[in-house]
Structures are given as structure tokens and as C-alpha cells.
Length: 310
Image (cartoon, rainbow, N blue to C red; front, side, top):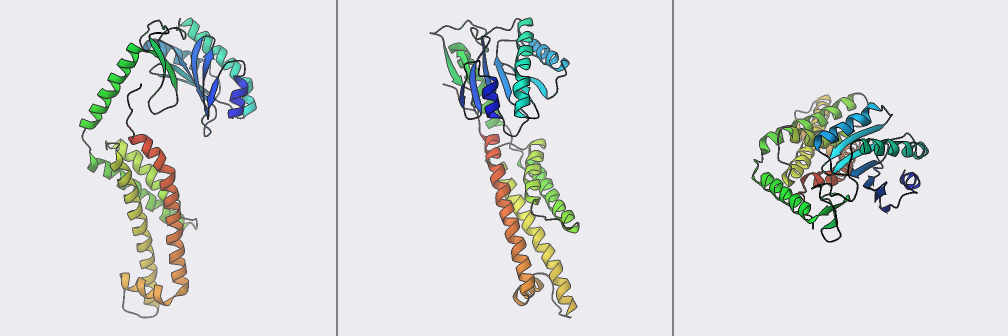
């Protein structure tokens, strides 16, 4: 899709870095981000609008009822996702989508790139600079006054976050529910004859979701609690499962032992049991590492606090 985005914007002077592009369209400062996992890129038009005007823009885009086209607002303007089923469809769809965006912006008298999208001041060479927004690759041209205002908001947000209660207990309840759900998925999948190793994925992602819903503070403890609780839950489930199997096995040969004693006996005296146990543990360990690795980058983004822009 990135090639299709580049082709669709070939008539404009865009500079690309990976899946991000920055340039001008009809005098507007525009960022474009192509998420490989989505149906199409997001266009961010930087412009100084009130919240009411932004809402009017969103309503106007939505009223067009164009398939896979969605509008939203951000601090420095408006954003539109132009989606398509294929890259070629996007190339055909993009010019019309941009035309509609420009039409609505003109109807709202949205200022172009000569006006700061944060303060509304007229931009001049000696009072502005292009900055990269915190925790993103989006570029915006702001006046010095606007940069000071943004930095003040970031400092206030970080201070409020620092002083906010951790709510670890509430957060842990959410993570625990996620872990239980992962175990339940593993159990049900096992009964149906499917592999159970994807349970850690369910546990981690659902647990983090509920951690936030229950009011847990999004810091590094969230990562530790999520991964640790998932590991304990999955290992506990596997041990309980094989202990039950071991108890049944020793009962069939009239041995009076149970629990870990029965498990140890079966591991020492049955190659088939030992092989199945080791295989199950190994497979789940691999999937846990995959789930942890897949989620760790996303979790780190969640806990990373924005830094002042320079």
C-alpha cells in the first residue's frame, strides 16, 4: 500500500520516512501515515479550527457516506482515513477523497499553512519551526508561542500523571480476569481438540485492556504484572491439568499417591507422559514469548510519557 500512497500523492511534494509522509496539498500542511495493518492511510491536515468547526468537518465527511472513509479531529487540525480494499482502488479513490476534504475545509474557511494550527498566529521565518509531535513521527510547523503552550500542557499532564494514584489493586483485578479468561480459552480449546497455546495472547491483551478499564496506572508495573500473572496462570493451568492426568494414571495401577507425587512418578516412569508434558510446556513457553514480544512494544508505548518538544 505504501507504493500506492506514493503514487497517489505523486503530484505533491511529499517527503517520506518509512510509512510516514510530510508535505503540502493545496497550501495545507499535511501528514500521511500508512498503517500496514489498516485498510488505508490517515491524512492529517494541520489547520487552526475551533472544536465546533472540527465537529462540523467530521459531520460533513460522514454525511458523504463514502465506504471506508472516516474523519476525526486532533489537536492541530483534522484527520481523515481514506480506506480501500486494494492499493489500486485506493489510488483511484484518493484524488476524489482529497477533493472533498479540501472543499469542506474551504467552506469552513480553514486557514492554510501560513497560520499556526495551535495559536492562530501568522507564521514568519523568525517566529516558527517545524517540530515532531511527542511519541509520533508527525511534523507540524508551530510558532514559538505555540511551542511554549504545548510544552506547558505536556509538563502539566506529566505532573498530573505522576501525582495520580497507582490503583494497582484495581488494575491487578483486571489483569487477573484476563489471565482467567486465557486459562478458560485454553481449557475450552483443549476440550474441542484445538491447540491451547494461543491462550497467553488472550490473557495479556485482555488483561491490559481490563487493567486500564479498572483504573490501573499505565506504568512499567502494568507490564510486569501482566506478563507475570499470565505466566503464573498458564503454568498453573498446565500443572493442574497434568496432575489430574497423573492422578488418573496411578489410580489405574492401584498406587496410593496423588498431586505432585503422582506427577513426579509419571514423569519418571512413562516416556510417553514425559514427552507430552515437556512438549506442552515448551510449546506454551514459545507462545508466551511470542505473545510477550508482540505486546511488549505496544505496552512500552502505553507507559511512555510525552517529552517537551524542542
